[in-house]
Length: 63
Image (cartoon, rainbow, N blue to C red; front, side):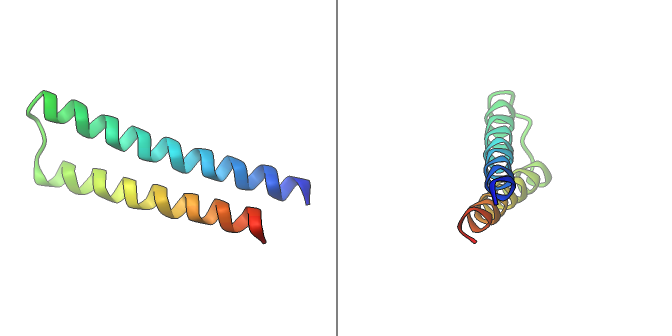
């Protein structure tokens, strides 16, 4: 029971880190004027996947 809660919290932290890294990479690319459509797609996919991982972590905490 306690291991599930710790695992859920770790999953949420990993999802938050994925979102943070994708947003910071996107900001750096905008400052350097290096963003293209492929890189934007990768960043958006990482953000969506990060939210999905956070959702799974919340689901793990509740159930």
